[in-house]
Image (cartoon, rainbow, N blue to C red):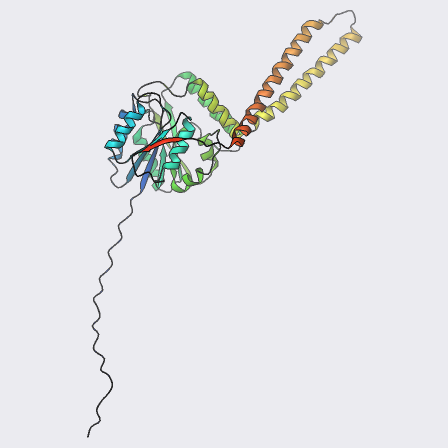
Length: 340
């Protein structure tokens, strides 16, 4: 009798048909705009309209527009609220008071979430179409893209002083600050994150960015006239910004005090030698003591006051930093989901 196979029968396994995984959607780059606003009610709508028109030509990118209301005293905030209501890309950071342009830029960088962050003013002197040229250079590999002014529609005095200041600052510091550039620039996400770690109060953002290194590039453009209103950087604020830039990245003023001291000492020695020589070799000629004494006293007094002023500028920075107060206070964030 044939032997029966008692091994368990294993059913035939039909391999399941594998469904190929769906390709992951390509992530679109997000570009954030940081837009400080201070009393710009006359031109903010025109700026926003021109910016939106320029962005419409780049459907492959996503954008967010972070307006920072720097304590405006006019109707700027009302207009910004209306823009946020009608454009989901708009987010408004409303300061509790005016903290200044450089602090407003800092707050915008703190709020921006894009893969790249563009900082520009809202007075239409920096054309929105140029910002997309910065994006093109960034996509080619640059991590910081400066917008360099090829020409500017300003007064002759402002052009001359700006031209001189940037060259003096560059020659007196170890930081290679690009000539003829303002705060209009693009920062890669990595650079923006590192820049957020810099929390000094007397800020000179363009100098900080230049000192960070990374791969930097420039895009030249022609700066337009202001669309409406008056400049928010009169001579007093420009002088303050210039002092912040000089004291933030250079000790040249302190070195100049030392040189001035040696010069005054040399002049004093020459005066002493002259007075003694006239006393011993030409006693018949009287040296006018009162006039000489007044000149020397006034010269030394002016030199001392200038020296104390320079030292005071550096001591004031130390005092401000030692207080450790917040850089800014936000009253409200309008639009967007509020996440950072």
